[in-house]
View 1 (cartoon, helix red, strand yellow):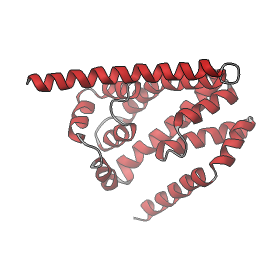
View 2 (view 1 turned 45 degrees about the vertical axis):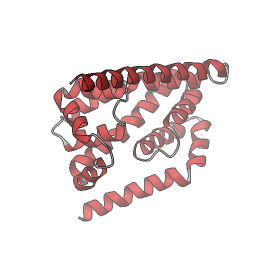
View 3 (view 1 turned 90 degrees about the horizontal axis):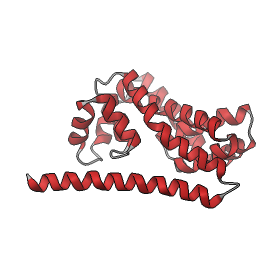
View 4 (view 1 turned 30 degrees about the vertical axis):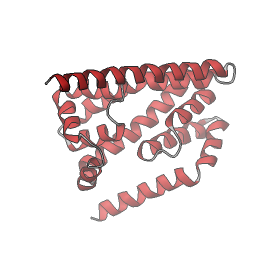
Length: 209
């Protein structure tokens, strides 16, 4: 009980810092340097738990400050730190709370069946093509018997394309704003089309049955 209170208090403090000091944190990120790198990773990790600002905006800013390669490393490190923290909290700290959160999402059993069927490929697919909300993936995997290394590896690989595109778009923003918007807009359009095709096929199959 004491451990849960301490962890909860720490999370509240971290999220509170991210929420109330987001402008200051963004200023630190834009300043560059070692402190900026640390703040960037922390801010990205916070956004996994609580989207203080949209991740595309944050990753784009980081890409603009550090460039594509370093931006990818910083954003990916922060994202995976937050994701693994989410995973382990669900598994070892707040199982009851995590299970209650799942009830907010429809078709949870369908999600669970999909993620359990072939853990690595299912998690990888969900990261590459967000057909299931990221928090749901984190919670279900945290509550399941999915090995942490499988979850970590599949999530890391799956997050790279999105972060790479965001970082490159951010790095290109100052020199070519139209290209940056077009690049990410095209990526979103592709994801939307893939999701639409998946949902259409699923609905067609259900109608046939």
